[in-house]
Image 1 (spheres, rainbow, N blue to C red):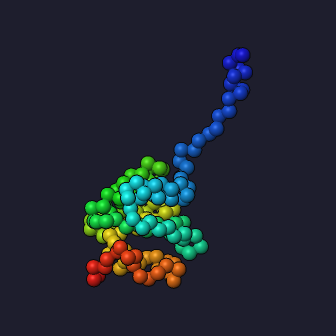
Image 2: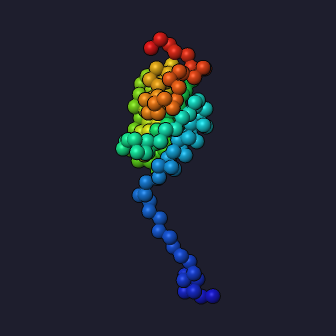
Image 3: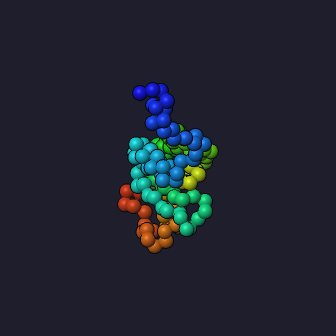
Length: 142
């Protein structure tokens, strides 16, 4: 077999390096990251048809401010490693409520009592989700 014959049998598939990861890919990265960091009560809300800001929103709880901060920092790094561009993080100073904006997905990370106070699930889903906080979440009189 000559080199010309071999070259004809090899098909090159161009890879676009600037291609952004899909929303589903980012969602999988986020969910895996949250599971690896032992985030609690992870809830995904589809925003398709409800908001143009993102395709999906994920809400999760950390056990303490330090835990929330660690989850957020790991998530930012994993999203960047997965190809997300311009990942923005807000709220790391206090770590009561940290927002990680991955473009097509938004992740809200809360301490338990802060999550119970803001109750984003009720805001986005209405009566589909109970207004009462989960039994293990204690409110701190916010």
